[in-house]
Image (cartoon, rainbow, N blue to C red):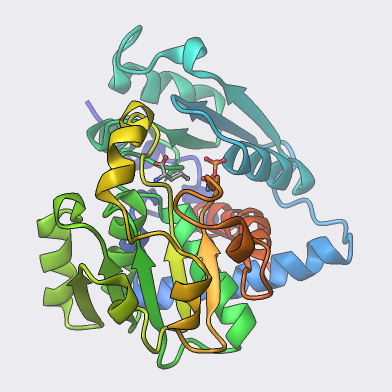
Length: 323
Ligand code: CP
Ligand code: NVA
């Protein structure tokens, strides 16, 4: 049986319903803005080295079935600096769904920890984890989406531009978990979002249809990157072969010819356009070294903001944020 609402350890903080963050649109538009505001505040506190310990005596379980640099380091560092203790669990430690059922792990880990963060292959596993956990579950990437990343991305754009009005984001590359994340965000915040991908690497059609149906954003799927990036404020890309598909990279390279983000492609966007990438990047494959190192590139601000936004997400979900 999934846990009863009364098992929720955060009910004492006025959180009557356990909140998870499995998709960016698990938050309402207003809640997304609340999280962005919290992130801005918490980032300033970190920059000033304020003594800010809302997670004193709290514990975060971090379950990884895939490799990670940014996600592991940013969650662990952020939670530690807010006074908590993070437990890093490698793919060999739990082998979720293999050594032990997902629903068993959900209930066991909930008995020790205040928050669960998990990076898994199968999206169904994170849904099951959240269903059976009595503490908030945060999706740190599945094959389907990467909501923490897209929250950091939109926060970074907001920081750079000072507003999110009239924002054209053109994603160039594989129609993968990052595209699904952008599409789900586009159902909450008004964007002009274009995914320029090869025809055989389209995003999930139901996710595209849902994003369009919300009527919040203008959304297009295109196969001509040079045309798509016209008037773009942001050109975004990701690897052509995601984790779990790395063995396909050589074959994929020929399918993605013309989809590399290079200086010619950036020149076709607005002169003020930013280049973004969730990282890790494969230089001179999906993006050139020159673009990565160019003044347009904001990839390291984007990477830093993972920590601030995730801190905000954890504070929001647990009701632990106080001004
Ligand atoms: N962007 C991102 O999630 O990076 P890692 O895979 O290194 O965590
Ligand atoms: N699409 C990439 C994102 C890595 C952060 C992957 O899933 O490997």
